[in-house]
Image 1: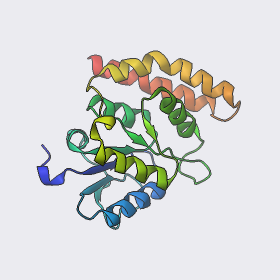
Image 2 (image 1 turned 90 degrees about the vertical axis):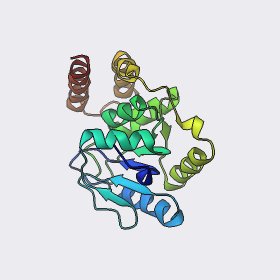
Image 3 (image 1 turned 30 degrees about the vertical axis):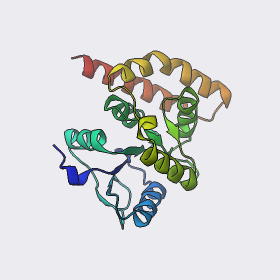
Image 4 (image 1 turned 135 degrees about the vertical axis):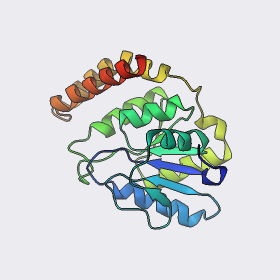
Length: 197
């Protein structure tokens, strides 16, 4: 279990091998401006934060404990990270990885996050200013960044993923690689199977 002194803001960048120093930097900047608020970053393959505390990886249960007690959860646009935050009762603030910044192979996270933001499933931050505004809002109005903790998040995503991905593919043909879409669908099906066992 996470100690009360480790609550605060949580940033989680997942396990992708691409670096996401941009988000680590944005979280560090928040930490420098809000020294009274603990900031913890699970940074994966990205550079370690200079101001915030963090770890490259955490055991899953420790990460989920941190999600549960954080006043806000900031994550990359990975489906698993988004669903885990929601299953712990948090409405995640999502900063999608960008291909042009070499944070991923394509912009599927950007397109997917925009679609989820349109449905109210996440709060989207494409700039540092937007991220900091969401963090201020989450601090001042925490109820707006909470959802009912449930595994229905996984079920909802599974039911709607095909339509979302179809929309993404036809909205900008060639924008997302079809192999990436197949990987995502396989991941979600395997995740659903693992959670129902």
